[in-house]
Image (cartoon, rainbow, N blue to C red):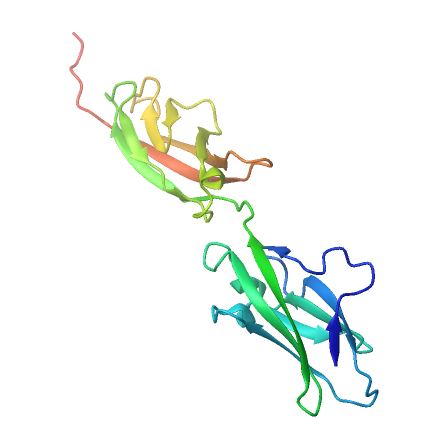
Length: 219
């Protein structure tokens, strides 16, 4: 049997790039399949030349009339750039019923993509006599892009402007007068946004309770 390039395939030799999280079944590349024995039964296989688990990420199949081999994404859930190797060397194998085989060795690169950060809701309390720039609390956010520093630079902002607080990185700070007798609780949205294009954002609800403080009476 013969496993070869398709006609006019300018990238037959690879390497082939596939974005992480690509849907299961996404085509990575196709090759021509032929056999001089027209009635021969052919089988396909893919092997990881370095035994690093490429077979769990990628697979091969025939097209409808068995004239092509298609390399495709086997399991999107496992195609996570942060959890796997960035590149795999695979052996593509075409075998006939008599055990004769043809093979091609190709490189498949997994490409990191920017993924959205996430931020948790938070509840804090602070005394009403707190001063401007006093720390109220820290919000917790995370970004799944652990391997690409540029993808995990995060900016925190308060969405609701009419609150006496501001963000200093992930720290909520006092930014105005607090008075328990006027307002006992503030509830507002905090957004976390990465610095990429397009920017990806998540929001959380932050609740701050203003604790009463015994104040000196006026005469």
